[in-house]
Amino acid sequence: MKQKKTARNQARKDSPGGNAAIKSEKKTEKNSFFSWLLVLALLGAWLSVGVMWFDLVDYNSVVGALGGVYDADGDGDFDVEDAKVLLGLTEKPVMVASPENPLGEKELHEETLPGENKESISHSTHGSTYDAEPSLEFTTEESRPANQISPEFPPATQPVPTSVSTPKSIIETTEFTEEPSVESKEEKEAKKKKPKLLNKFDKTIKSEINAAEKLRKKGKIEESLHAFEALVQKFPQSSRCRYGKAQAEDDLAEKMRSNEMLLKAVNSYKEVAELPDVPPDLIKATLKRRADRQQFLGRTRGSLATLEKLVQIFPEDVSLKNDLGVAHLLLGDNKSAKRIYEEVLARAPHDGFAKVHYGFILKSENKIAESIPYLREGLETGDPGTDDGRFYFHLGDALQRTGDKSAYDWYEAGHRRGHFASVWQRSLYNVPGLRAQPWWTAEETGYTVLVKMLERNWLTIRDEALSVLDGTSGQFLPEDENLRETGDWGQFTLWQQGRKVAASCRHVPKTCGLLERYPEATSCKRGQIKFSVMQVGTHVWPHTGPTNCRLRMHLGLVIPSKGCRIRCTNQTREWEEGKVLIFDDSFEHEVWQEAESYRLIFIVDVWHPELTQLQRQTLSPI
Image (cartoon, rainbow, N blue to C red; front, top):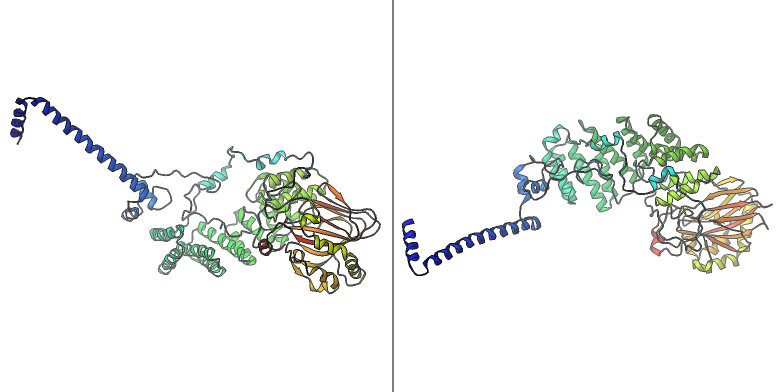
């Protein structure tokens, strides 16, 4: 063959132009070779694109072939992402810790402690904000409007305290900077420690657990639940399988908005903790989640019992004791909560969470001066759970009552943290976007018909109020919100949270009859309709109402000629008999009664005029 080719080339060489033909042919062969290389390279590039963008590789087959021996992405198992790393399609990830992911783990890792349910209401978990108005009681409302109000009243009329500055001690907590924070040794150790949720047996069936868990992470909740139920049936002593079942039930309850399904999850969490050989980290994760879900269902005492069990099992865990203290507060058991926080502070004297709550309790006991250092030092720590508007609210209030002008510095800090709409407007149950100004005219509210009716019938309303005030029925009850510095202040309520008090209306039927036609007042779930009598020598501390969703009307009934006045922000006004004053009580206001006889007014709260009908129907009562 080689001889034939040589002879052919010699013949072509001897022919005219033979050398040139041979050279041309060799060049063509060389070009064809490089053309094929180029084609192959392009095919390889397009194949890579197809793999990356169109998922041409069956990664799951790679997963099945390697069966968990290669953990490239650091999530504790072998999965699709590991297959991509093994095939060279992605780089091995570097896990970086962050405030949201302190362990530096892959998001939704199957062994990560359960996080907060973004759409659920968390009441008592350490490091969260509670659902409570700025009172001295913890409540368990099922919804809470946003804290911040975006618009403020026009600059031309906006009153601002003079010389307001942020306390130096909290500048770093009120200004957001990109400088890295200095972490304690304990915090660094906590980030390094990875919770262990698998016992020895569960490690032998890890691939089956992972398969069911992957379904849950991908949002295939029903399939995941069926998978975990099958695993529990197959391995009834597996704590991790039962925990996965509880998590799937928890997720499905949220998806279905089903309390019945959530109750199943609560029971399943309990079953996990009762099994033998449960890893401590899994017990802690399970019972913490169970306590949270019980609280969400309104089973506060059950949540308390679960937290007590947790504290018994993990007596050295201060955060669990802090959670237990909150559970007592939510039940109104301030005495037990106080004892718990005293125990925490004896062991961890710099725990900011315990300090703010202990200060909160002291203030509820009217130990104003004693509460200040705990509230202040707790806020200064910046610890999780301390950045709560109520703590700024009560620290400022305590400072005001002791005559300390730094109160407004803390109100300013609370405003900068987003808890208050402004230094003056410090309500915590707010709807954003509502017009915000301290004083209103009847025309601005749009409720001119109601105002005219009140002023036209003020004598009828006054006479009925006097008949109750002069009688022996004892219908006027003392103000019970700890707002008085001195004096006596009584109230007689006709509507509360949008509900008529029938027993009260029997004493003043004409007044109640007049109001029945004005739903802006009688349906106001975030207000009251009541008579207010204030005796000589009464002073009401500066304070704010809980919400920006209402406006407050004051109809003067019995007003002494001088000595009675009300301040809202930096404007002070006086009542007139038969006239209505309108203000927004979410702004700071203060009252003096320095006359020689009592003052009697009629208070009518109305919905903020900019609230929609839907908002008025769906907002939670206050």
